[in-house]
Image 1 (tube, one colour):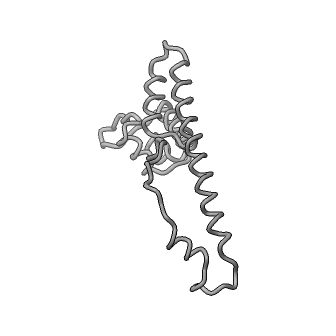
Image 2 (cartoon, rainbow, N blue to C red; image 1 turned 180 degrees about the horizontal axis):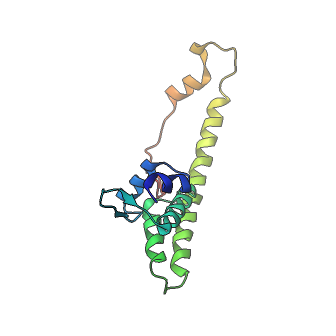
Image 3 (cartoon, helix red, strand yellow; image 1 turned 135 degrees about the vertical axis):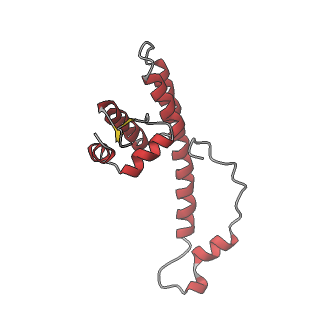
Length: 143
């Protein structure tokens, strides 16, 4: 199948297919004499796996690890579980970060009522006066 058909079957764009090829997640296909890409069912299966991993917010590094494991069928699932366990730990960390962010936003939101002039807006005053701590950087794989 050609790239457009692959993209349609995988419910993505041609640009997505090319992007995953460049990122090394999707193997480059064979080419015809006219230099058209020719994809097989294995490309569609791999592309669906990649897209499903991305839907779970997995990083390219995690997807590379899973694909490498998928290519070594003689091992057990322990390494796959380890990748997922690590990803779930990242999700837990991100949930804590987002919970803290929500508390900060709620605190600011409580400082302002509708009908107040912008000059007296408690949110804007709070933002201007807020002391921000040096952000230690996210502890997640997302950066």
